[in-house]
Structures are given as C-alpha cells and as structure tokens.
Length: 164
Image (cartoon, rainbow, N blue to C red; front, top):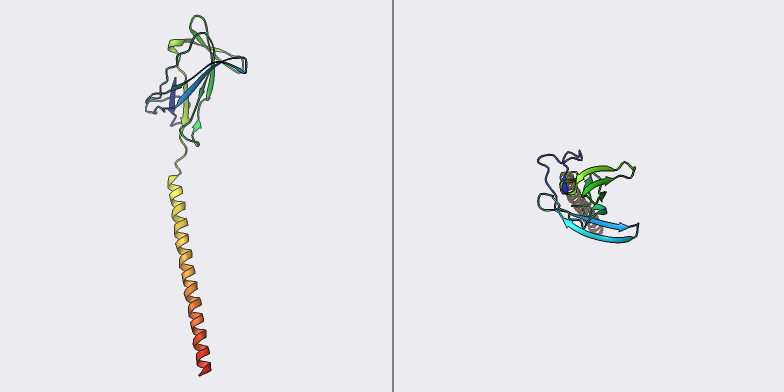
C-alpha cells in the first residue's frame, strides 16, 4: 500500500510525487459491531506500508490520519478487501462489482492526498494591511488629539485675552 501527496490530483501516483508518513488502520469484523481483529500500520519515509494480515477473511483498510485539516483526498479513504483461502485478494465494491486483484503478496493499493492551497502570501498580505491600517488609525487618532489640543489651547488664549 502507498500513501502519497497527489500533486496533480489525478488519484494516481506519478514519478516525483512524495510519499507521506501516515497511518492506516486495518480491521476485521464479524457483522457490523463485533471487532475480530484490528491493527495500525505506519508508512515509511517513501509512503509505503506493508500490511500483514492474520489469514483469510474480510478486512477494511482505512486512512487513520491526515497531515493537516485542509488536505483533500483524491482517492477513497477506505477500501474493503477479502482474502481467500488460496491467498488471492478481491477488492469489494459497494455496487456488487467485486474485483479480483491477484495474490496478496502483489496487491498494491494507494491513498492519495493533495495539500491545501498556498495561502501564506495572502495571509501575510492581509496581516500587512491590518498592521498598516492600525498604524494609519493611530496617526489619525494622534492628529485628532493634536487638533483637539490646539483647539483647546486656542480657546484658553481667547478666554485669557477677553479677561485682560
């Protein structure tokens, strides 16, 4: 199994698309509620995960985490497989169109994710505008204070002149 950064969002791992060190969870259940077997596997630095199953049965393989909240998936985040007695694997489908995919040792599944859009330039620009506006508002307040002080001082001089 491979977990990779799908830079072109085509759901296929292309040369140069880096692997992601994430975890996958594998579960086997009897019915919907009875958990028979569960294990977490972690990808290596290249994004590859080797999953060892205890034997024949039906298993759900799910992406257990993401690199960040804004990452989007380009593939399904969960697949269900059935391992037969002879070691062959069948990819189970919700539509009933199950797909035999070969022997367990050679099955390759993948989860693809795309990183969030690059927002940092916009965030920095917005922060700069906020700081600039804050300073501008401070200058406006300072100018108003000086104007008010000058008006008050002028009024004081007028009062003093009238008293003389």
